[in-house]
Length: 249
Ligand SMILES: Nc1ncnc2c1ncn2[C@@H]1O[C@H](COP(=O)(O)OP(=O)(O)OP(=O)(O)O)[C@@H](O)[C@H]1O
Image (cartoon, rainbow, N blue to C red; front, side, top):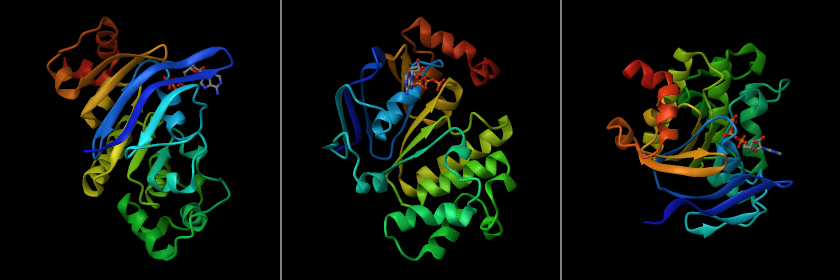
């Protein structure tokens, strides 16, 4: 089967600084794949490079077996969407939720907006009462649900999730992670999830790549982690630092 996403020898350089170097991994269709590491390890930069938001100095990125060029086409964004840590970043403060959800449909010339907007709100557990509210009239968790609805409304096959819950309280975090997992199963979506928290990635992902200083350290399955089959001291340190693993221990 063709991989949903394949990254080979990726390097991202800012001025002279190699923020990402020698990163390779592939994600199967319908798989949930995690990127984990401390702050500054280059996880977000990998996602941003896939989304066309960071410059690729070296390596290739393929989506569905097709190598993508540096300039992303409009059709790329129908297949690949990104959700950021801070939903304020993707929601305009003076635009209603309705407008935020209508905008991507208009950009891509997709009709039947009202039905799609109501369906998207329903899918993320928000009723139609939220439709004409503004972002500041929502809680952090509700705002992140809107950002997820906005990413899903174009019916992408791959979702890039950059710390999608780390700005939320622990209980809200669990709700949003469970929502994402339900949507993935229902839609058969492929996820790449970035988190500094090994417990979050282990809960959500079948396989994960541990990164440090922009480089890959270890590729693991969640089953490896659960059985403590870990090769490196760095991954062990991440495990000790993770709240979820501390609770389990
Ligand atoms: N646009 C940029 N210009 C210069 N340096 C950058 C830029 N974006 C990221 N970096 C640097 O690249 C390195 C990796 O950053 P990145 O955001 O990918 O790390 P991260 O692992 O996602 O960390 P965090 O969890 O804190 O977001 C950092 O040292 C960061 O300062």
